[in-house]
Image (tube, rainbow, N blue to C red; front, side, top):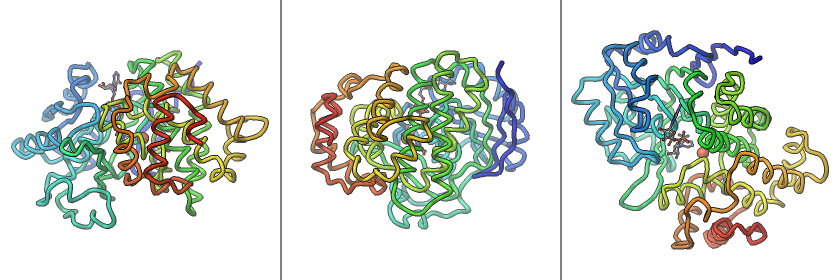
Length: 388
Ligand SMILES: NC(=O)c1ccc[n+]([C@@H]2O[C@H](COP(=O)([O-])OP(=O)(O)OC[C@H]3O[C@@H](n4cnc5c(N)ncnc54)[C@H](O)[C@@H]3O)[C@@H](O)[C@H]2O)c1
Ligand SMILES: [Fe+2]
């Protein structure tokens, strides 16, 4: 028997969690003063019954679905044109991280005068934005992974430079999140596993990132524990609403925790995703053990706590590494980047871009471009020793 988990949270934003809560979409729009929403989703979900049902709940809704996985700037431009010409006053961001990010960035850009790349997550560039020009967002996640529904950033690929850029503003945090596990029951096991591992890596990297942030640390550890217990259940039986509910919570916890920082897994996953269009969570899931090996000495203080949280016994590094490898196997996640279509075409470029990625700042071991290139090569080849 699955428990029915229903709650309202006001942390880190207003979250309405529980099965069936999508019925409250009209109330969510009303709360934010949205009368004519643009519902931003992706091509894969456009014709899904849940998107049609959402539209019927708020009949003034117009759907915009020209968003691909790993959204590109052209998707944002087109969505912005639809938002402006349709006279919309808010966004319903509906889908996985790709749709959520696109919806958030379209709402953010709706009243800005400067171009998108002026708002990249560099220093205080976000202060360039006019906060009055940011439209309200209701976020409705349909995957449990990125946590974008409670995040203050959107990831967009710059096709001209083949780089994934993080667009950041504190007010990009959605005003209301509807976290309805019933919307995730149709997610196939492979995407469930890959997105769930994204959340795991968010928690893991946040916990290991340097800095004083006990709030983030506590959330990250509980997130790891939830994912260990419930991700296999969600993959085995997609209709297990308790597992789906707890995974949605864990995904939001990952993104809440990574306000502290991310690390080398994401630093490499971003250029790999931009150059090879691999799925973000899957890329992270493959990369995680290579970065655990690389960061071994730097994360020595964190390893016993993580091992204890996951109820692992024995020497913490060995126990964690073998558990991660086994967990990945159980979830049918491959061991090498080559297995997901990544080649050794441009290791030095990947290394340089990884070192410049904002996530690299959170890596516990100082890591230069040449080291990132080596770790990338090790992950393509599936050679864990080379990562050390
Ligand atoms: N903003 C952030 O903080 C943040 C964090 C991590 C990742 N990201 C970004 O999020 C994106 C990845 O998001 P994702 O992992 O959720 O994948 P996704 O949004 O790209 O979706 C993957 C696939 O799953 C399908 N799908 C989504 N929900 C479904 C459902 N309920 N049933 C059936 N199919 C469904 C989609 O149509 C798509 O084909 C990347 O662009 C990544 O860079 C953002
Ligand atoms: Fe991620």
